[in-house]
Length: 455
Image 1: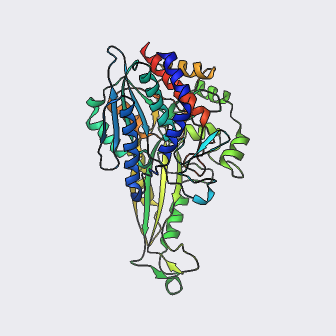
Image 2: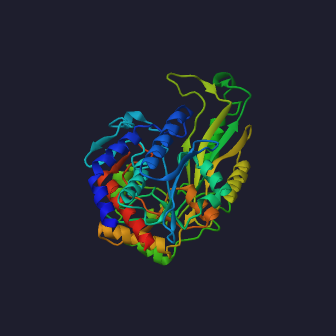
Image 3: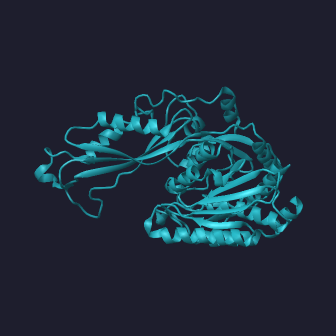
């Protein structure tokens, strides 16, 4: 079965790439209401493909937002059941002026496929689909499989979280395979064993009843944008340390052994600064390495401040309101409820005079640490070693995949975070790409992983 499936996958590579391109042409931007039809079209495209390769009970599951896509193949008695997860929604492509090719017209350049969603996460989702197709075309699946793909990961994943909580018995499995992470370096097989959680919030400041003329009222009327700037400035100190009282008290620090492993990784800080970040210097809490700051320390970032006058020319207005979108990334030892409460309470104590403030939670996800002592992690290690010819390294991820925590909380199963992106793939940024060789090697790794799980 394994040899036949690998042979099928290799022969099918050109077709697999063209199918992925067709999938990428659907602008399934989950955060923009104008693209709700495109998100559904992507779900239907996926469901049609899953049915065509021989999966059963294929259906769209409606949520309050975008639909889930479910399928199953439960014909391996006595073998484990794997839940395969990815997401088919994508981020907005802005700013369009920075793309070298149209974000929803995939283009091959220098061994990479460029498009919004190429690596996050349509390309990695399609690896799972093609692995299943290769095995089914060569006989049957060596394990039982449930497929659950969502269309709201980029906007918090509330639909899938609710479904997992309410229908856990319908998703009974032994482990979950998540393909939404990356290799630490090219050709270095990598498993992610930790993710930061997140709370995404809005802080809204209100001043006067209506916008005011700054000549007539400036100097007397409160300016919500100035007040908001003061609030933001007091959330962190000049070194990047978060100032919210008690927030850092219960953080679980990485072990000395884990830190030693991180120090042995092929990390080039100069290259990271120049090719990935692109700023004049790196910032952050002193006393911690870059990997510690991005994997094992909480962060607070401002993502946007809409409001006031931003058009061409001048309009001397004091806005009546100002808004900032702010997130905090959480690490082991923290939880979303406590973190939001501490933020909300602290902001209330630093409000400048003359304005009122409201802090709202938009969405949240808990941090995750994965126990590596289980047979499914070992199956992944062996699969990637067989493909890449090197030992697999364990890393953490600075990002958040809320559903991984939901798998542990509601299904009580471990997750295997086996991804094939690269650090410079520009996910969430212009010119997002996916290394085509990794697309093929990822497919082969998943085939081998599923076979290994049946052993």
